[in-house]
Length: 550
Figure 1 (cartoon, rainbow, N blue to C red):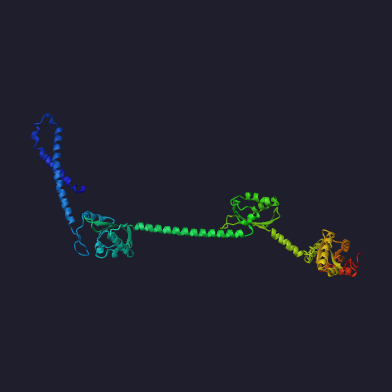
Figure 2: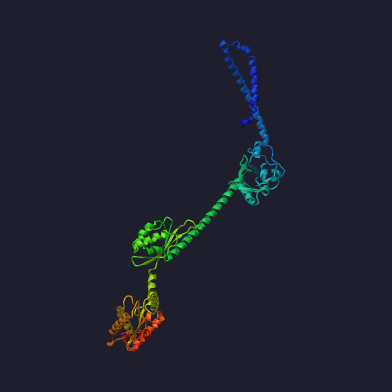
């Protein structure tokens, strides 16, 4: 029996003990006088009186305690025998087992925070605590008057709730479950349900005890946490998406820069290499295993200077570019192995237009371009058979020399040369023999023409020589040497000798005109005059001189 049932006994026991002690002490007073003198002391008297009081009081306490225990047992038996009425059927149910609802339990579940309920073997609620009104706004009587599940359980959770009750009644191990209740000012509210089977003394299942606790705050926290986690996952997925896209773009850009034939070098503001493509490795003869990314510019310069023909001039160019923020002009770098590389550099501005991100250098190997350009230029201005300057270059040089002579007040001389007897050689021995004559003649006359004089083949067997700063006597002497050289050449085709001579016409810009057309016309007239005189001679333009200069 609980100790709190005995608390009302103590005050009455104390009062009764005091009365009994006084009643016993008064009749015993004459007997104390007969005791020895030692027992007459106050201490002995007090101790004896207290012992007598305690003995008497103990007996009375035991008697009252037994009477109180009998009353409590009778009260408990009466409560156990009280039937519970079902609001739905209106008839008394079987008495609850010994572990049933006592008056103290009813008070606890009514005043507590948790919602308590009882379910019969048919799966219906036949009792709920008044706490139900806090969650649903309905009283216990209103809830039990209908179907508990249909009235207060959220619609989507009803079938699940019935299935769990059915499994619990079938003696399955049901763990904690969470369902939603509806009603009242709270609307939908999350409740945690705990099942506990109730059995009689013989182990027969009488129903289920259901304890329901409020988990709305936890659910809201979980939902917020799930939303936060979902938002973080979305942000992470978006970040991974952008990172993947960035890596893809970087791979595309790297692949693009690798197929570009120009060497590309990115350097940051600390002059460290950030990126270099494959073409740069090829231009500067760097091995693929050499890790130049991250190194300073001085390390890279030490490597490239060994390939440059003029390291001092190259370093002066680099320092000049680095000292300016403007884009540099293309600069040609001559390599020791004959290659020609051009470079171009500019500062890479930041995204906000403020502090720069570094500098980009672009190197291009133009060796082949230069070779092709020279070849094209050679083809454009040279005669393919004799390798002499052609008619196109002749007109360009004539215009240039006339312009220079006009500024410096000098005279330009023109010698128009036409071969005598070339057509019979061509007709008799074939064009191959004629080409041989032209090639040999160009080679021999090249030794006669001086450095400042330009020798041209205008087509067929026609040649021309331009002489800057010329005088009539100098042109006459040059014409004499040319005639002698050509006349002295001999050829042999099919064991048959052959030879040619030349008719030369001479014109001077100071006498025959300072424009190309007039000068060419005067030289041609003089050349035809020499040919009319029998060839193997030279003549000045008659309009200029008035007579032949021998």
